[in-house]
Length: 212
Image (cartoon, rainbow, N blue to C red; front, side, top):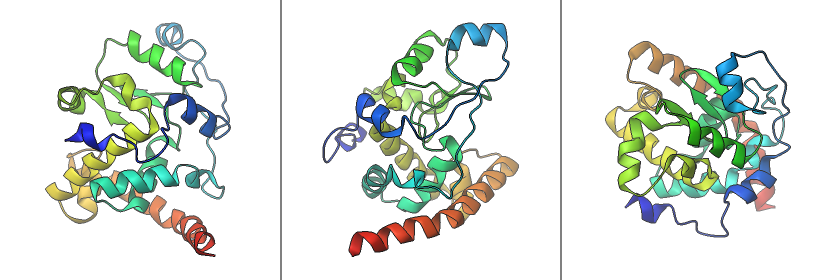
């Protein structure tokens, strides 16, 4: 049962803890936006000056990523690459029909979700699409705002990745995490593969340090 998988093995990394963990992760900028979207998101930022892969940011969520990947039996480095491609590790990232929104707090992200009438929204670290997966998740008692919790999002996203790679082997299955449309799938798989390769020096160095 997915609900059982959502029980964290250690201390909860809920919204408050996650907020402290990544508050300094992504420096923000401001952009012009439509009036309706501006009214909806308030102080949320729609475009961020995102960090590069040369920093330590991918390591901040490594413990949670490793745990979630183990429960879904998928490669943790692959989950890390997807997190980076999807959200740059920002747990409250949202995307509404192609418009990226970067709320600065859990409460701000939850408020935006509460006022959204559109179910076509990607949520959190792994940008889980609620229109596609919401009915399944709701049967396990998971609501849209629950996906703002880093652990919940990573467990759900890792299980979706497991499903995708069982549907199709190799990088095609990785691409299917994003879309079954061939050109979208292949473009996404390429982006994840490129990110996975870029992450390897960071993650491998960290593992060596852990064993010292």
